[in-house]
Image 1 (cartoon, rainbow, N blue to C red):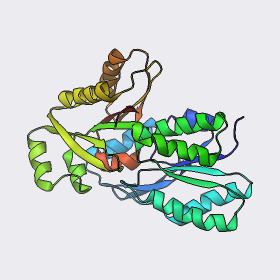
Image 2: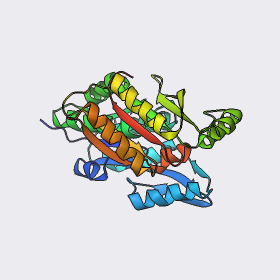
Image 3: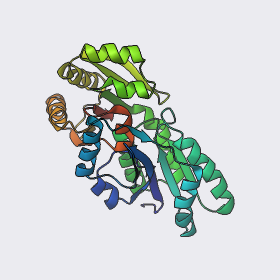
Image 4: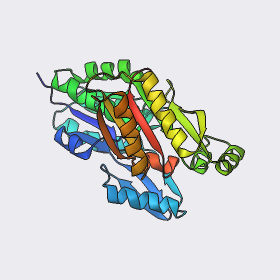
Amino acid sequence: MEQSYVIFSDISADIPAGYAKENDIRFISMRYSLGDEDRVCKEIEAEEVLKRFYDGQRNGDLTRTSQISPQVYMDVFTPVLREGKDILYLALSSGLSSTYQSSCLAAGQLKEQFPEREIVCVDSLAATGGMGLLLEAAVQNRKEGMAPAENGKWLEENRLKVCHWFMVEDLMYLKRGGRVSAATAVVGSALNIRPVLKIEEDGTLKNFAKARGTKRALNSLVDYYEAAGDKKPGERIYILHADSQENAEYLEEKVKQINPQCSVTKMMLSPIIGAHTGPGMCAVVHFGRR
């Protein structure tokens, strides 16, 4: 029998807006800036908004994000708890952000006010479409009758099966975030090097390979999927892109050649993650052997 608790995530997750609305997935808003303009991302952004964001990056606008404070969680969770509903929250990887720690601090205080309610916070050790895959699973688990704690345990036991393969076009964004050195960024950009990254088991981002040129980098993402993917009928795969539709379509074509029966969600990357990867980033995300 389906449970009635509320599933939350922070807005760094990438998942189709229609699916989120249909299944009552709610989001914790996050702040980001584009040049001198400060913005609040409250919901899955429309493609025209995202395109303006990535065009701004291409035009030289600096982009930044800010963390979610425990008070924000308390403000959002409190009305839900007062309605008598429990909460399951899926956070952006603790290896990339402090959102999970902030949510746990807020949950600890709220449990003192609402001792009869369940507030389960889960560190996804994932990002972007990886969080989308885990949210889809959480929704299905809820439909099948899993209570919040049981659902949270399932997510923790299966989160390391989510594989993320990324490539970026502009190394300077990774340099600003401390992911590569300034020398690596300058030399790599001059030599047309495209770094290939993955999310490690501790939830951190690792630059573990490189390719010369975009097409070779895209092909490497496909190769890693082929080596690690489940490739079952109906396999769920997310293809994310930072305003690089043509490259995303290329990835979808190649992935479907490997598994014609897969189910692909292709969408633009949220500005929360895109602020740190830059325009042109592409990713293939799936369940498999991380």
